[in-house]
Length: 267
Image (cartoon, rainbow, N blue to C red; front, side, top):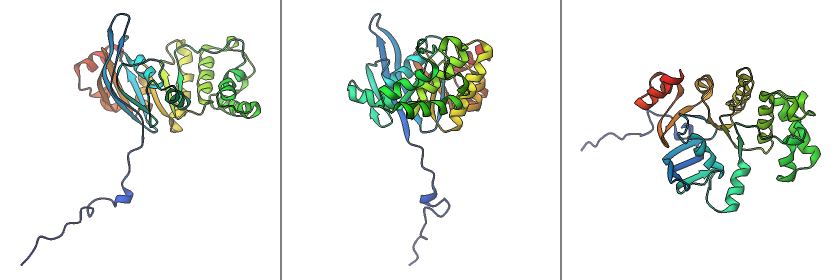
């Protein structure tokens, strides 16, 4: 009696130990919904997105699409009414301890720089590590100087924000966020308030962070940055996630008519 030959399920594949495991999920947003209570405007309509460790995800979309609101839910700057958000394994809820824990892991850079004008660049960068992380001043200042060198403005450390260009101020804001040693960085249109000639220096700083493996979610209309740096590009419109794809597919072969319409207006 002859039986079927045995089959080795791994004979034509790499050994299990060599199979590449997907990177851990740093942000998992599931069916997130938000209304503005003042007018019952449904700004987020069941948005789901997963961002893995080391990924750079760029969110694009027309004005009023909900993209900035969406990333601001990741650190509880905007509340949401339905769905779930997990950040670095912590569920974002109304629990203040969870919110505080998440904010310690998430840095954010806004359109406006929000620097303290009466504090020097160095003082702006060291303020949170000293008062929130309880670091010694000398240690915080040494780390801050390293970060200012990283973002290319070490020589500005003793100056005040009003003495800097917009691009330099935004790089101070990035250094300030990095001073808290976050595992995730959020960027909400960080170049939209800058003159065109200042945009490149900020984008170069963001490219450097991506090269270092920082997990990043960026709301931006900077197509060149998205093409070069993003692992995935997401289109949001009317409070919904319309399409997500690698940059080459997103820009060269979009699948949805809404994406094609949007790209025709910005390319």
